[in-house]
Image 1 (cartoon, rainbow, N blue to C red):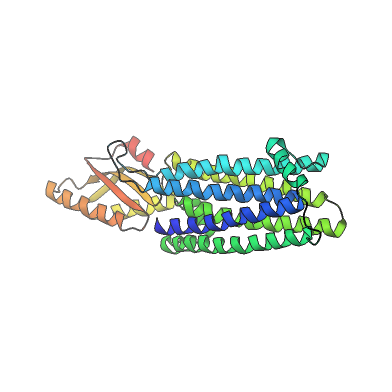
Image 2: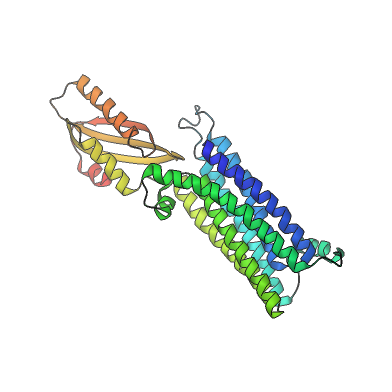
Length: 333
């Protein structure tokens, strides 16, 4: 949790500074891409606030109403990030860029009109070059985002090494640490957005056409909305109570079957109840000749082995069964 919080705090500082830089750049230049990037960075900053709230709630001790703790709070607040912050920011960016492409305006709703008013009533100094402002702001933002990405990447690489995953693709599919996952993906998307904005502004300067700047705003909006859907789907599976991947479950089942005295596994369930926190329940058929004390000692050994397996297992419930039942075995497999 401490590592996830450090990643979020780094992103919060970076994105807050970037949002101020980009908005100042937009007020000085009126660039559509710069406004889209401002929406992007504001959403990123709000994102970190929501993630910090999720981290705070998830760290609360379990109580009667929540006997397994509040770990799923991180999943919930990350889901809010994807729906409200990234979705809204993506839509506003897309709407603003599309408005300028089709009508050549600077608006897009009441918020856009207010920003346009600020821009129109501001007169920059004669020595100020708008192009230079855009480049300085975006390059400065690139530096901040690179630092935040470095911190998030370090956090994810630590998880990859700890769980012996093959790489980022497997980590994205298996990790339950949505806070680090969100920060990593967000920073990557942010860098991509800065590159798109730089390309759009550069092409506008080379061709003299504002089309490229406005098109980059549309592309940034679409990218943000696409990420919102991907992040929402990732959090949905964890909020609903997803089990461990099949290959990991198979390893845990094999660990149980490796004990002398275990005849069969009648039922087997796993579920995430928080980031890196897994509940395992198993209905196990033991050797009929074993005494009750022997079964109790064996169950204790099985529970300890599963918790030491390095898969985030923190709760294990083993229920002795007299003999396998076909229905339960089919579900478990």
